[in-house]
Every structure is written in structure tokens, then in C-alpha cells.
Length: 442
Image (cartoon, rainbow, N blue to C red; front, side):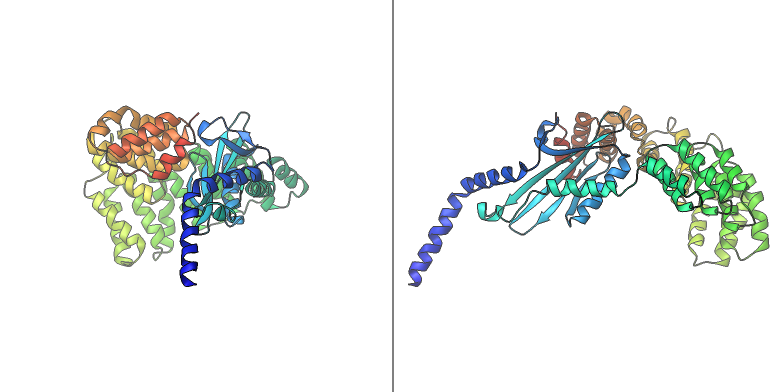
């Protein structure tokens, strides 16, 4: 009896192993039948094949956030994502079977984006395994639609402000929508209207100043902060920060000195004075203030930063044009302290004169500033002319960043070529990105 059962098990195992291609083909037909429940769209990108698709008119950042949230809402794991490309990949695994779900967000005309969803079923058990899988395309698109529908449009937010002008939250939501959509002029005007009604809102005053300084409007940012009501140390510190970003260090020192004198134990004010004094060219005053920070609070994070500044001070005051070595050390500190705009100006001022390792380091620092701002064209301009030399010098990481920039510019063929070059130059490129780029082949 036992021998008969064993013979049957062996026979079934052999049958399943040799019929796997046929079972997979049957399962594929079953998957296609599920997919036919909703219309499919033939992607213009050949490698994607037939996909489920919708067109959305919303800012990219809103759509991308809606897609990633929808994966979470359906309890689908995100395994890889690339915001520069507008790509999210995830799914669900059940051990011997599961699904891979791919979403592409492609820009179209008139501020629209096309979302394409492709579902791939996986099984190591033939038809038996496929029976436990599903096509997530319909569910995911429905979840995305629901998620995006819950995010009000700019028109709806404008109406909310008009119907309830006393609501500061309604105005803030409208500003967020403007910024997300790149409508910074409208965001600035809405901030001004908000402050006219709520002049004591220092949070919004600081946010408006930051928005203005990001647009290169330092004088307007300073004026906004000067109009703050009452004496608020945080507003004073923020105003000093704007002075520093505008390369007006002496005015920052003048502003901060009374604050430090009033409260000698204020480590933050003393540290900011020291930094402003150095940027204003007063090395002696800067050394004194940084040293007092270390002496007064040796375990404080400001003390650790003060030590770094003191090392930099050993080279003497800032000279213009700035030496590359000094600029690199200074800009590393500025970036760490969220003074990116000032660091950017200093780095851009030395990039043409620097050469070899110093230039490469300046490029790396600029990339850390440009990437969050999605300044892909600026990254490409920095690196592309140097590609051949970078290949010889085995600087694969910089070539990789050029590939990412080309992804952001949606130049997919150069992106793939630079990715291969980065790998050849010794940089370990993500395999996932190589696979994703195949999905952009027309």
C-alpha cells in the first residue's frame, strides 16, 4: 500500500514538472481574462505592452504622493521607487506566488499626467499557484482615484477661503497647493493676504520669507520679517539667517548682538553671531564667540559645530575670489546648517576654476543642493562636458548622477547609456533602475 502511494506521488511530481509550461500558459489566459474586465490602453512605450491607464490633471508631487499612499492603502509593499522618473513598483508575495505591480507617471500636454499600471503574476507552482494571485490594476487605479479625489483642487481651496476668510488653515492649504503646482506668485500673494489678516502668525511670516529668498528676493524677505509684531527671538534668528543668505553678515551680527547681551546664556544666539562674524570677515570676533560656545556648553551640538568652524578659521578670513579648498570646507558646513543657497553661490563661483578632485567634490556638493530642487538640467550641465574624463578617472558615481539627471529630463536613451558607463567606471548601479529604464523604450 505504501509503495503504491509513493509511486503515485512520484508520478504526480513528474506530471507537474513536465506540464509547467502548459500550466503557465493556461494561467496566463486566466490572467488575461481578469484584465479584460476593465479596458486596457496600449502604451506608447513598447516594453510596457498593454496597461490600465487614467489621465490626471494635478501637480506631479500630489499625484506621486497619491500613488504611494494607494499602495499602502491596499497593503501592497513598495519595493522600488524613483521620483525623478515617476515610477513606483511593489506588490505582494505569498511564498510560491505573488504579484508585481508597476506604475508609471508620464507627463502629457496641458499639465496632465498619464498613469499606467501593469500587473505581473508570479508562480512557481503552475496553474495551482496562479489561482491564488490577482490583477491589482483595477483596484489600484480605483484607490488612486479615491486618494486623489480626497485632495481638493485649487479652485475648491480658493472657494473654501472665500467662504471662510477667518480660517487660517484654509489659507495654508491653498498656499500648499500653489507651491505644489509651482504657482509661487500666487503662493506669495496668498501669504501676504494671510499676514494682513493674521499679522501675529510668525510661522507663516518665516515661511513667506523662505519662499521669497528661494526666489532670489532677499530684500523682500528681510522686509517681511522686519514687519513682525513684538520682540520674538526666533524671528530675530530667522532674520539674521536671511541676512547671512544675502551675504550681509555684518548686519546679522548687529542684529544678534543685543539678543546675546540680553541673555548671555543663550548659546544659540552666540553661535549665530560667531558664524555671521566669520562670513562678514571678522575672524577675531568669530573665534572669540565660537570659543565661548565651546567653553560654556562643551557637550552641546553647537560646540561640536563650533570646533569645525574654528578649524576653518585657521586659514584666515574669506577672500574673494574664494580659494577652492576653503570654499569646499565652508560649503560642507553651510549645507549641514541648511544654508544651501549661500553654499550654492560659493560653489558655482569656483566650479570653472577648480580642477581634478576639487572640482569633483564641488560637483558632488552642488548635486546635493540641486537634486531636491529637481534641477536636473543644472546637474547635466555640470557633468556632461566632463564625462570622458570621468570615465578615465573611474568616477562612476558622478556619471551615475548624470544618468539620474537624464531620467529627470526624460532623456531615457542617454540615461541608459550613462548608467552603463557608470557601471563600467566601477560604480555599483541599482539593478532596479536598469530594469525600469527598459520600460521607457518606445
